Image (tube, rainbow, N blue to C red; front, side, top):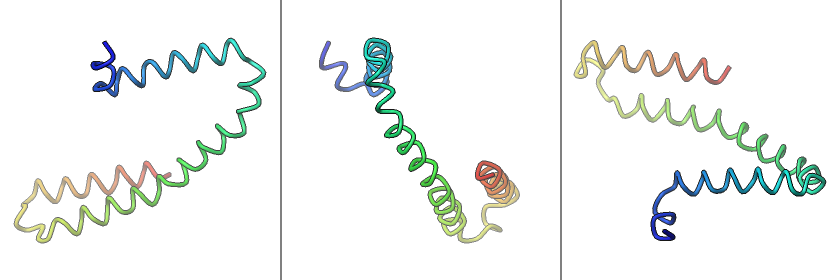
Length: 90
């Protein structure tokens, strides 16, 4: 069983989720003390989203050297990608 757990990221995340819920319910005061740490972590993750999306868009456009070679489908794909990622930033 441990070998399967080591290989499956999904099972690891699921176990961590249930373990976190159990510890949060059992040690409520401790979980309240950790709240600022969790809020800081979420803020850091949110702060990283915009630069990562920007880099992905720039590298995607750079990787598509010639849009004419890709044709209409390629141009529509790049346009769709740019619009969706721009909306995600808002």
